[in-house]
Amino acid sequence: MQSCPNIGGREVRRRLHISCFSLVLTIATILYIFIYSDGQQRVLVFFPSLVMGIVLFEAIDRTCIVNAYFGIKNMDKKNQREKNFDFLKVQRLKSLIIILKGFITAIIITVIIYLIPLNL
Image 1 (cartoon, rainbow, N blue to C red):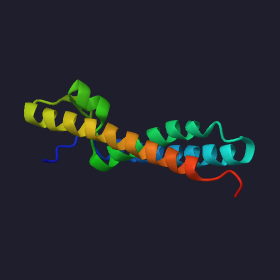
Image 2 (image 1 turned 180 degrees about the vertical axis):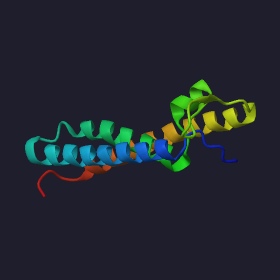
Image 3 (image 1 turned 90 degrees about the horizontal axis):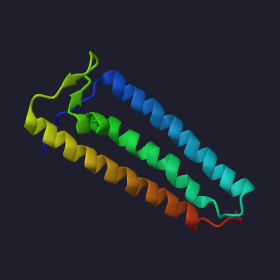
């Protein structure tokens, strides 16, 4: 698959910052579950890890899933319409793959948390 990013450096950095914040939130949720919960709230780890995974893969692939859906590019100037239909198809396919990788990452993290016993 050819590479045709739809976000520039500033947007990539912003997504990396959001991903780091989501990682901290995921770790805080895990600590809360193991310190204060009886284990029934382990599914809560799924949501911050889903955000972390999707935003991280957006930054790595330099493709925003929302921009790909609307056919927009943001290459550090201002939003522009994507004029090349082939690039738009590739961006939309990449956005679906990013969502899939984010879901798989969140499911794996949640399953690992379910497998860890509460009495460490």
